Length: 357
Image (cartoon, rainbow, N blue to C red; front, side, top):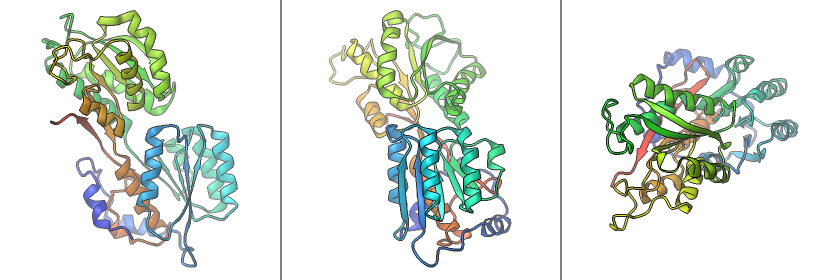
């Protein structure tokens, strides 16, 4: 069995939300806990929207790695198809599982998933893509573990503001044309996707709140995909060239795709000959992402990616497993490390990440 002390040390404390009174929370959850698992190992379904997404691939591995012995977890990849995920869940429910852990392909698809689970009396823990509040309210055995997208956009803006000197009236040398306006490209995730819309809106809103002027040269939708970003940014680099002072990406995968194309097109040269790529090189251009992928951290260390905002999948995975253990009767309510808001939400803070030599 995994040591619960490790969970507490891994859990970010700065953004915990106001807890329910302990007695009320434990009583409410205990009334919903699954009590039919004593006869054998609990059967849990883990449903991922798309393992081609490197963040989700790592997230799934972390959930499996955090699970204690005695859990029979079956993993499914929907390959970015909601109909496939629906079929996977329907077939799995025929096996009379104890719990569903679902990363929905489409947040609007949560409605049908909840209805299916309720009919089978199987509780559901959603993660990464938040269902509508109205759908979450359909049943009292539905939970969500995730991070607030509004926070990621705001932290991304803070990284940029710090880099450009912090004074909107007097930007530093990263304002190459000296006009006190940051000329930027934006790589956006799926059109209409909750996180993509919020991250894009909030990063720009945060600049406005701090009186920083940003000119969006172009906004390109690349569907969270590294290869797609690599292809789509090509014409933007040719069109805007040295006018580009910043690249904002809704996630790390697209940021890495952009950097690959930028390097191919002659950006990020070690012009000062010091043996490293860094902001002192005249053609270095800041690129910021979101997620905290290992590949992104490596790109930050190498000097190509300026920074990212970590979407702490490890802490979320640990929270999911703790909640699952409780719902399956394997953990007491008083030992939950995470704060539960409104009886059904667990939030994990984003954190900024830049190179620290």
